[in-house]
Length: 367
Image (cartoon, rainbow, N blue to C red; front, side):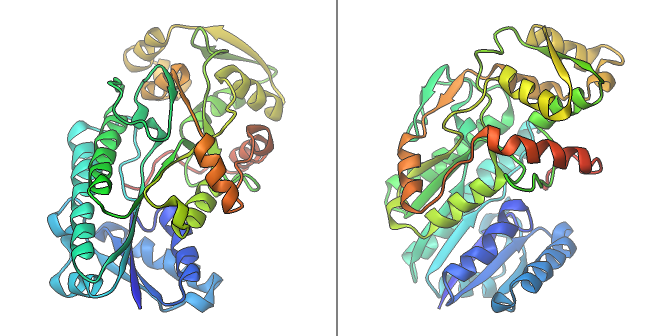
């Protein structure tokens, strides 16, 4: 027997990866660490998962805990049970919010990761750690100007928000443990959007703000874009690609010790993305050049501008993001497990249609 610990359940990744992990290892039992305020939602999510896959029913325990607390808030009985068997850990919990306050971001993203790594070390010293599967982000690159490789991390890059900065610091914690011998795989998704076939997503943020501004206009849609937006890549990937990639590589020996860039190998520019949205929405795009700083100031400080655009100023930095992500090694690794990243042209249609058909989906993520 073995145990699999998930943080971040019942978020999108945890809900998708938990059943696939149990199917991969028929002898494993899952423990999902859940914040008390999300316990009701976690029960509903687990019930839905088990209805859809009765073969894994009864193999998951929901345990109240908190990654910001040393020991993850686990009581001794649960901790001992986890450490009595070979343990695999999926650390998925994080604050996914570009406008997050510094203290919250550091407590959840950095301190929380330290506490998970401490448990992983205890497992390695006990019955054994099978692997720590850690979900980071491509944006540990900060605003590095140039090509960022899978193994890059410390390049003196500046950061424009606390989310990117704290995810960078959290990955440093994991990378240090890996370099000291802990079995680890690090996954770096870029901007995650809806499923490539259905367009389904739990939240509308990031590029969806551009889409909503287009759809609120008729005929010719005016789109304020930074100068040079025709040269800036916007890297977005569908959610099923991220899930498929992590699920396949989590059990793949060649991924052990690797950092995996789950990013689009051939991303559109900001203008190309906006033009594709406009075509799918039946609009004609007219880009209006506007300095990012001026747009951000207007959104934050000029009465009525924020309500008009409905775009958080923190999002604008990604329309001038200077980093390109090399995925050569990752693509070769994914070929070994039969996973391919759909092109933006392949999934933009479902993305737009789901957005139009589901106006009640919000922009907030679980934290």
